[in-house]
Image 1 (cartoon, helix red, strand yellow):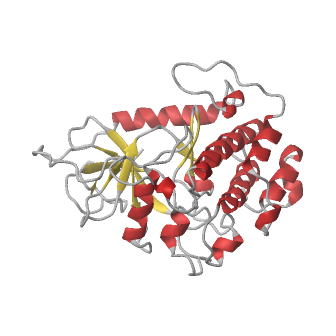
Image 2 (tube, one colour):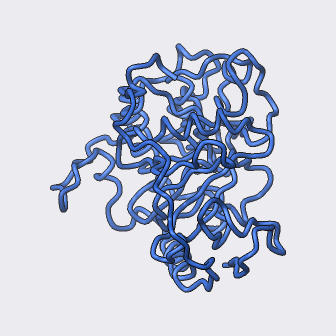
Image 3 (tube, helix red, strand yellow):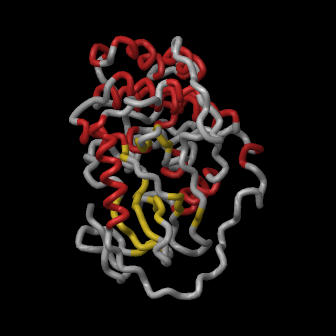
Length: 332
């Protein structure tokens, strides 16, 4: 894993920034992800000024309006569910745009396929499908749509997937403006109605989920029907219907893929989820588990020269609960 060891503010020899806000960059998250799987934001693993905290930090692409990017990051702080990584720290007004959340060892889905050497096993894809569908359903219950789901927005951790890149479609262009071929948006995962400039709605998330599952199972967001595992063929095809009314409800997806699987007794204090029935030992190929463990060890061992310690100003971002809940607004 490459790391930034200088204290300057300019980019390092690989083009990565050395500092973002108060954080020192350790490495880029999406190193090794091929160009044909777009990423809607710049993502880094970074360390706090005191060296005690490691975060996953995001900043907008150069083509994205920073204000729209920060609006989506602010709303993401309210997202519920175990399979999502909401922002919990935002740059102050007037500063370059960025947001951060605690670091979790994980691989972007495209990198997971590269490490695995091809499409993921059907058991893994089914587990991803149920976990993502469950969390999208929670978002829709909050009157929110993700509007950013694509292969690169899904991070694979040892205990399950995590959704990132919330609101990427809305940040890329306002409603009414065509979004086709915009940088950072995966054309195979972008629902047709959103590509044409339509307001992102929950059934658009179902389309993007189908494309993401197709990618996990075949390496392509729009594969030939015969390339898909037989157990997923009809369901994914329905998700990818161009007409939203023909797409399945998320509850149908969860019910069909769970089948007779039963959720075991919860461990610790976490509330059980239906995806737990598929996320037991062996759900993730051993090669991916090893790669995630290696990433964690590399980040821990990375030598990063931290800036001289100075008095820290009081946080300027609003803590959750200080403003009206976005769930009170119309579906985003």
